[in-house]
Length: 264
Image: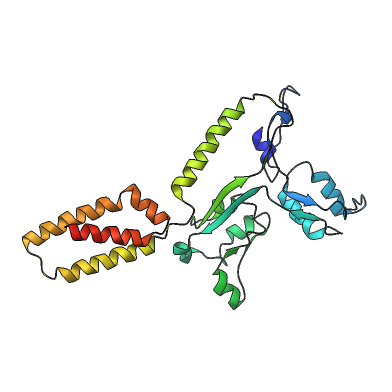
């Protein structure tokens, strides 16, 4: 029943047979995806938006929350998110993006956080497509919809409310295992997008340096160069280089490459 409890768009509904067999109060909950300034709220039963707001407060439905936020008669309803994260655009592959012809991310986003920059200033600042992360709640729909996998949604933290009823429930150990897996994967992957072109540039510079230093190759030179190539290839396949690439530590990569060259 966790899917029914946490889904931000109310896509799952519990149908418990026999009734009362599962108590949803034994499960953890997410904090709500909205806040209401109750000092301003009028709860007008004759107003269509107020009726919608009163109806949906107990179940998450972000698409309707956006409608309420836009049309609330006293502007007291605001979408918030219990999820913290970031949206990453793979800039080195962004030439594949066709925002005017595709619009998959724009069409699927339930809170309209994706937009196409129009002014020259915004195009210079954001590029051809952008996400307003102040509106985003990191559901991941855009990532799943992009036909060229140009979007990555990373969730860093989530505000979870304890079950209303305490107890040693069977789902607890499963959740702990998954949380540990997620944390481990996040640490290994690193926080930033891998910037492969920067690394290619360093390797190209190193290759050019080798070409300058060895204009003509004898058999002995070829042997030395092959050995050097093997060392460089082994270095590029190591876990250390993957970490440095993630952290964009190009100076360390360059220093290590020079050390390998000088030792040949």
